[in-house]
Length: 128
Image 1 (cartoon, one colour):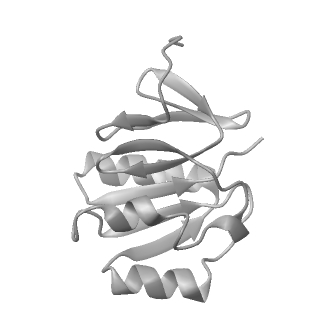
Image 2 (cartoon, one colour; image 1 turned 135 degrees about the horizontal axis):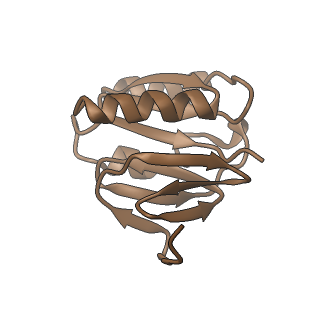
Image 3 (cartoon, one colour; image 1 turned 120 degrees about the horizontal axis):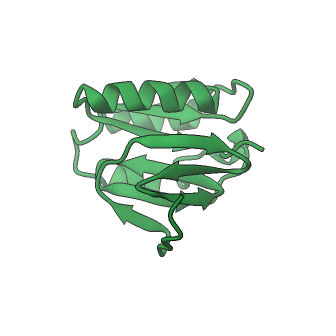
């Protein structure tokens, strides 16, 4: 694994190569903590629990150009936690569908859809 460091943002679309131990591997580097994966890049992301996934925590997604993301995959750790009604409403208004699942399943689905050149994003909570 590379020893590259970054400032919390890596531009571009990247496959998620691995996860666990409280972090993720992507773009020849690793990151401890949660990440937000958008068409514009991968960012360090503050939430550590599903309850912290709110419209405000996803502001970077809402700042993407309208239509850049058609589906948001939310990885809620090891257990499934549905998005709040407030978050569902905000995403619907932005024209983004949402699917919530365990982080491992969200990563697998994201990588497949990215490979199909779909307009997909992922909000991924780190798992121990």
